[in-house]
Length: 403
Ligand code: DP6
Image (cartoon, rainbow, N blue to C red; front, side, top):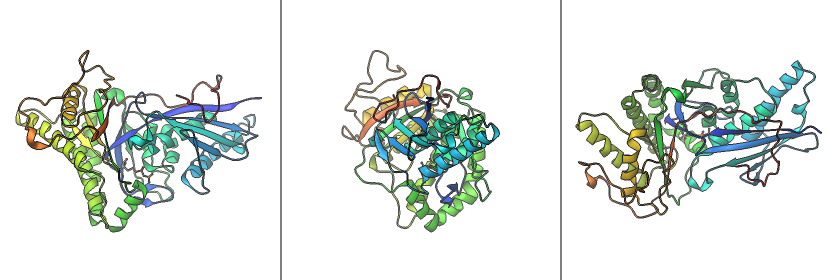
C-alpha cells in the first residue's frame, strides 16, 4: 500500500512595516501592505507532516501533540479545502495521479520553540501546513501562489513562504487574488542582519491580533491616516533601504513603524496596550545606544520592533550584537546562561553584562531576574521550504516528536 505523506517546515517572520487591520475578515485582506524579515529556521520553525489516506474518516490536526478542532468554515478548514482544490486540478490534468484530493488528511505540526514564549507561531504554523500539503499533493505552485492560501490561515503567514526580506502586497481585487507575498531581496543579499528576541514575561492575557486589529479598524482615526499617508511611502523607502543595504534608514523606518503600530493601538477605543514597562525600558536602551553612535558621527546601530505583545525584537548588523546582548543582560539579568549560538563571547560567557563607554546608564533602571525571561539570538537565513524526500516516509504518529 502506497503511503502518501510529506513533511515541510517554515520559518517565523517579524514585520518591520506592520500589518494591522483587515478590509475583508473572511479572506484576510489587509488594509495596508506590510514587510518583514524571515528568521532562521535553525532557531525558530514549525514542522508539519501531512498524510492522505483512503481509510481516514475526516481531516484531523495535532498541534504540539494535542488535537485541535478543525471548525467548519474556519481558517484551518479553508486552507485544507483550498489545497485540495489545487490538487484536484493536478488530478484532472493527469488522470494517472492518485485521487488524493478525495482522501481525508491527518496533519501533525510542531514548533521547536515553546508556545509559552509568547512568540507568534501562527505565521510559521500556517506556512508549514500549506507547504507540507503542497509537497504531499505535488502541486506545481510558486511560493507567492501558496502565500494566497496561507494568508487565509493567518495574514502574517503569507510572508513565511519566503526567506530574506518579504513584502505582503495588499492588492486591490475583492477576491484576494492579488494579495500575496513577494520577495524584496533574498537573505543572501544582506546576510549579516541578525535579530535578538527578548522574551518578556507577561501574566496578562493580551488582546489577540485578530480581534484587536478589527477594533482598531472600527474606531481609530489615526489608522486611516496611517493606511493612506504613511505606509505606502514607508513600503517604498524601506524596500529601497534593503536593496541598498542601508541599515540606518532600515532601522529608522522599522522603529517608526513599530511606534506607530502601538500608537494606533492606543488610539483604539477602548485602547489596547501590548508593551509593558520592560518593553519600554528596552526602547530606552536601544535609543541611548543609537544616540551615542550618532553623536559620535556614526549611524543607527540597532532597531527595535514589537508585535502584539511585550516581546522586543532587536534587528542589527551582526557586528553590533555582542554590545547589544551585553547591554540587555546588564539591565535584565538572566536566570540561565545566555546560549551563544554564534560564539560571540568565545570561552567567556556574557557575565553580568556591560554598556559601551559614554552610555547614560540612567536611561533605564535595572530589572530583576526573570523580567526578560529568555534571549534568543538568531538571524535572517534562507532554508528552502518544501517537502522532504517522500521515498523515506517518517513514522507517522501524532505523539511522535518529529524534531
Ligand atoms: C502585529 O497575522 O496574527 O504581528 O491575520 O488575524 O491571523 P490574523 O493576524 P496576525 O497579525 C499579525 C500582526 C502583527 C504585525 C505583523 O506581523 O505584520
